[in-house]
Length: 237
Image (cartoon, rainbow, N blue to C red):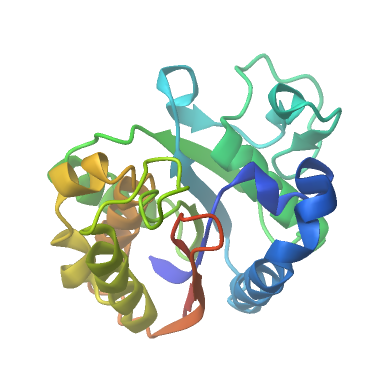
């Protein structure tokens, strides 16, 4: 059963070594992520599952001890998902899960075993919610760290350029995440999300499936678009 969730953005710029001189611009987001992870620790889970968007190579499960790095962003920094259990003959973590692993290490996570799941950005809503329900049944007390960004079309300089629909889409996602509204998350338009480059849509809908019937309350901790990309942080408990 799902007992808690933290929703965090997943730009590699969240890692100060990657952001370099621009690091202070996301200090408020990092603080909010730390607060959200505190809610996970307080829930005393039996298992933590980190879910985030992934390209083809990173889709599927990643065991505890799986590693990733930020070398593709020009930074010699490696991360590990949870505990070091010795050699893990697995593919590297996708960037979203690497950011999640960095957040966990930054907050000193040692409260439960950790696993990762990379989901494809175009994954259909029904499959997302089905996947979430399966994850919630993995242990008596499951917590989730859900990585994902909102639209990437909020300004002219955004990665996806300006799209007038982006603000309304992110506002709907913000309301749903802040209220732990699983129905509203499920209703997010997958085709529109793809057009707006909202990589968080699929992970958020996995969360919606996992949280159905769990009776969790939500709290929005951060909502901004500093680079024309919607970054949201929320805590469910």
